[in-house]
Amino acid sequence: MQGAQEIKLRIIGMDKIYDNGDGVRDINLDVYNGELITMLGPSGCGKTTILRTIGGFLTIEKGDITIDGNSIAGLPPEKRPTAMVFQSYNLWPHMSIYENLAFGLKLRKIPKDEIARRVEAMLEMVKMTGSQKKYPGQLSGGQQQRIAIARSLLLQPEVLLLDEPFSALDAKIRMQMREELKKIQLELGITVVFVTHDQEEAMAISHRIVVMNKGKFEQVGTPMEIYDNPVSKYVASFIGEMNFLNEGDTVRAVRPEDVRIQAGRKEGAVNGTIRTVMILGHYVDVNIQCGDQVIKSFIPRTEITGLDVGKEVYLEWSRSHSFPAEGTA
Ligand SMILES: Nc1ncnc2c1ncn2[C@@H]1O[C@H](COP(=O)(O)OP(=O)(O)OP(=O)(O)O)[C@@H](O)[C@H]1O
Ligand SMILES: [Mg+2]
Image 1: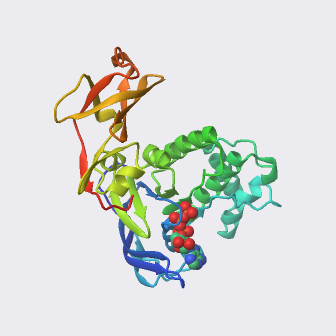
Image 2: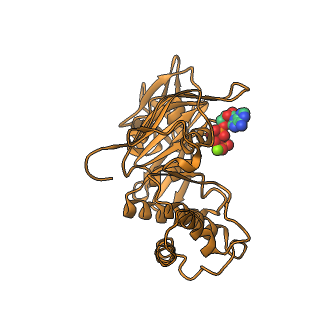
Image 3: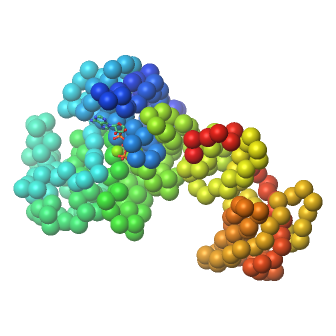
């Protein structure tokens, strides 16, 4: 994202409540031009609901949605400057890849040779050159999802909506796809609203993340802001690894990488005994039994000398967060 922070998409005081009372309430969000923003949260928290209200597949009860300052809330999906990609590949199985990609452009009466040129360029962008004559059934899941994204991008939407587009793919392909999406997004400078329940995926690709909890926004911020300064116990437990230490009315949250292990005992400190030491490549995962709690520490591999299982230690941390004990985590 470069340049001035111009607002592309705006959601203002929006409610979308289903007949049974579920849904999302009082949603307010500004998405900047060229930004990739991610809705992150557990199943049922309302991610898809928000995406569908932006795409026009659901009508809203209250509030407004604007793109470039114009309300789109009353428009049907095809009249909105948005395009949506779903979790399951929604390519037309009886059409070739070329026909799948060209379809939307034909509807817009774009000349044939221009369509061919754009399709070719887009296939190159998603690394699917040469697949024009194939049918969706002849492609892998990852390849089909590349085509689905290509088809959406060919419509040149102002805002691209992606609902867990990679969740049906295996871990390795998913990592590859997220890197490529990030690259394409930067190259085109397109505004993207991405939905996932995978915190690592959200951290990896987003300019900002919206952490959702039961139909509400819990925190909006850059991946680092959310990682370093979670506003609630819920956010702290959802993003990255976290130790929670009970301190009566409050809970102290400490990242494993902030826990330092010192040999011996110390009055007033958290004392414990090393329970496990696992070398995981460049860092070591050490679990320390402290009373009835187990605290996790990540330390560089170069610092494990002398930290053997059964050794008595005390813990210190450079950084921690305190939350009320009563929490939603
Ligand atoms: N058509 C519907 N009618 C009634 N309730 C619905 C409908 N669609 C979703 N809900 C409910 O609204 C809430 C939010 O659903 P939504 O699909 O937005 O969640 P989500 O965050 O996308 O979850 P997932 O990660 O499982 O896809 C859930 O409690 C769900 O049961
Ligand atoms: Mg969903």
